[in-house]
Length: 94
Image (cartoon, rainbow, N blue to C red; front, side):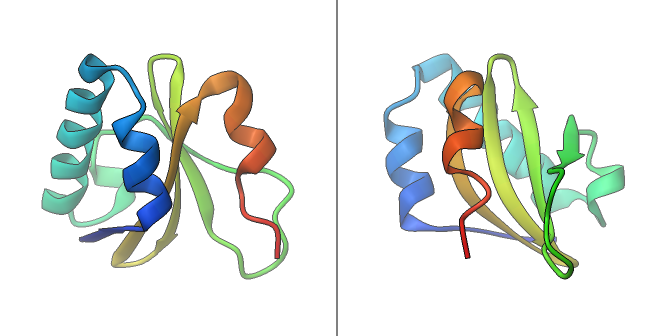
């Protein structure tokens, strides 16, 4: 799969603890080498309450969540925030 990220994701990633940064980079490698999200081996879940045509998911890394948009074969990483605050700013409001 093709893994992209936005500038906001990169800014978020700089502000997380270093051990979480390492796990996020490992997760990105898993996604890049997988054929699809189901075979990637990451703990993902579709975000509830989406409008038709939206494909937002979250990946759990301990108490942190990575918000992403998945349109096969492309993954765009959008946010990485602590569990309590990620759902206030993700998914993005249209």
